[in-house]
Amino acid sequence: MSLAVGIADLRAFLGWHVAVYLKTMPDLQIQYVTQDTLFESLSLESFVRQSDVIFYFVEMLGEEHTLINTSRVEAILTAIDRISDKIQLFIVDCPISFGFQKQQERFRYECFSLFEKRFLHLKDSFWYVTLPKVFGEFDPDSLVLKLLDHIVNKKEFMTTNQDASFELLHAQVVAQALWRAAQEKRAGELQLRGQEMNKQQLIEKISEFHKLYSEHIFPDVRDNLNRDLFNTYRSYLFPQMYPRYLSMHSDVRGSLFESVKTYSCGQTFLSTTKPGITRGNHYHLHKIERFLVISGEAEIKVRQVLSSQTITFRVSGSRPAYVDIPTLHTHNITNVGSTELVTLFWTHELFQADAPDTTAELV
Image (cartoon, rainbow, N blue to C red; front, top):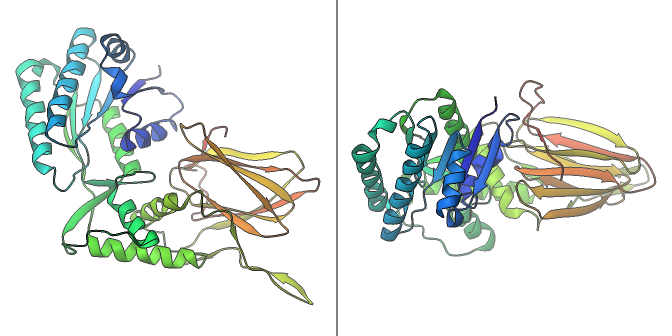
């Protein structure tokens, strides 16, 4: 029997990451709602009734949001109490944010006070999740993306307290931890921890990424945090940076170009594709992948998972250019020419049949 998972709010950065992660599970039924519509009585009733597990992502921007979030948690718990005490509810607090610690502490206190006064009999259904600084692809408010804006576009950035340390955790790691906890079917308080770093170290790391990648070089991404930070960096550059054209060196002997340069490791492979044939239609959570047409004419199509907008790149072997596929985007390549298409692919890791990090989805 498949489980039904409800996610509120899909528009939230972390809600989107969790939804994309859960889509890799073939036996899950997933429903998404926005918090604007969820708390209409009929919508909430239907949402709760159709869910075995609910992830509620807290919005926290100021004092008024403490009251809003507390009332919404109360509404969800009331519906669970009325419908079934077998439904698991995860209250996922917003990632730690400088300047809002007091509001976060107050919300946690209000949430537990409410639970202990009215819903203690649901103790096997209630999770409260606290997070460190969470970063990831396409988060408009992340510290990492603000640093990227500072480094790439020379925008001002507050650089005080350079030595102040914080913990960093990637959104996909949060998604995995939440799902693991849901499968354990126990309840309580879950505190996720990240990897400690200070602002200066983060600036230096992302600056190094930018320097190397501007020279067509992949940094060392064997460490998971480096890989996740680099993927976040790449998401900031997509799609405007691509395709990236390579320098062709030609003489009487023929021609040469450098296809992949990396301080890491990885796997390179070639494919041939007949005219009119499409390859791909899948996405990756972490894998870094390069498409580089060697011969022929192709269209590379890319779409962010759970969105409808498709981006198309036209590339040709006559002028070598690569597209590095962003994570969490389904993608394909089609031979649109009249001759055989030859494509070089590179990934940052060796293919593992038991853990391919590949989920089928049509572009």
